[in-house]
Amino acid sequence: MRAVVVTEPGKVEFSFMWAPLFIAQNPDLKKELDKVLSAEFVGKPMTEETLDKMHERVLDVICAKFRMRGLRDYLDAMKYVEGPEDAG
Image (tube, rainbow, N blue to C red):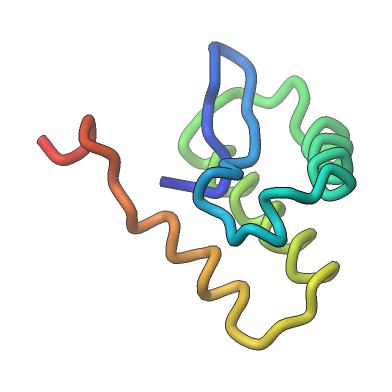
């Protein structure tokens, strides 16, 4: 699972449910992420490569805002979590 999830065809959102509480409950951060992702990714094909780039960009924004040792590694680890539909 990435830091972004496809919520409907052509729509991507930050996966707040997997984020630490101080990030998940930050409405200003959500607005900032929406603005950054829209500016950089609107019109791009929704490929695995694009979603990976969006994941990295979200981590860039969060880690620039919250300078905490290990935060990027913690958030990046979301990509190793699989939902029940992925477990096969």
